[in-house]
Length: 245
Image (cartoon, rainbow, N blue to C red; front, side, top):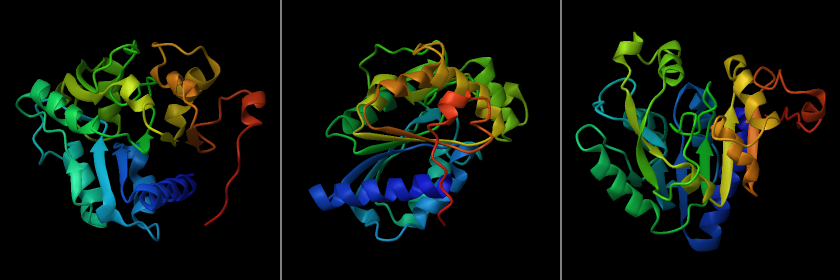
């Protein structure tokens, strides 16, 4: 799954660079993206110095050195491995609103070619927990994190207890994510199966935030067997098996 998604992502980046001389991307973080980013950083023929990177979200008040910091995550798993020189990290340690406004201004300066996203156990898209705001035009906003989201962070090992998880974050808005020319959504693991079913077989609703991806004309969702296991046979019939190296 991750290799297939990385092949598509690299192809899209190379195509943007070939067409315009540069590519603008949005990178996702979290445990679900480990293998995808590892495969992407190894993809051949990507001129990474021509890539400008933004990211989806960051905890409010969390130092960059903290193991759960998404700034640290992206430096270690993407920036340092590829040599990307143009990147915009969300420093929400002190003034989250100012960071949201500043990075949002840079983000909207030109179109995003491709955005990488995941889906949370509660169906969240970025840190837009249910019920997500489908209407705001702000590129980034400060959001409250619900208990299910915070428990997921403990379950993935980023924090020792739920009390350690920040209660708010800076998140790219839903409408801003949908402005990307292409969206690549990577969702592994059985613990995401309920959210996958709710988002792709239920109604498009703020109660299942990632369901909004179904309204985007150029989104591909990459599932593994475990995350897809609760989908109905009719839905599973549309799945593409990919065993390429």
